[in-house]
Length: 124
Image (tube, rainbow, N blue to C red):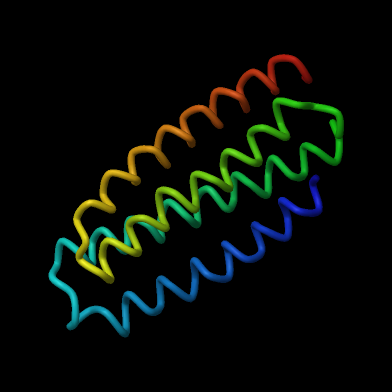
C-alpha cells in the first residue's frame, strides 16, 4: 500500500507543480480573478496534502498493518481528487455546480486527519 500511495504522491506532486506554473503563466490573463484564485487554492491544497500523503505512506512502512493509516492515505488521495480536481474543473469550465463537489473533498480530508490522529494514538 505504501508503494501505491508514494506513487500517487509522486503524480500529485508533479502535477501540482505543473498546474501551479500553468496557473501563474498560462491562466493569469485568461481567467477572472475569482476563478484563478479557485484554481490556485486547488494547487495549494493539493501540494499540502501530497506532503501529508508522503508522510502517511512512510508511516505505513513502519506500521504496515495499520488500517487507520491505510484509510488515511486513501482518504487523502480521494480528497485531492475531489477538492482540487473540482476546483480545477470549476475554474476551467465555469460550471458553478462543480463547486458542490469541493466540500466533499474537504470533508474527506477532515475524516482523513481524524483517522491519522487515531492511527497515531494507537501506534505510538
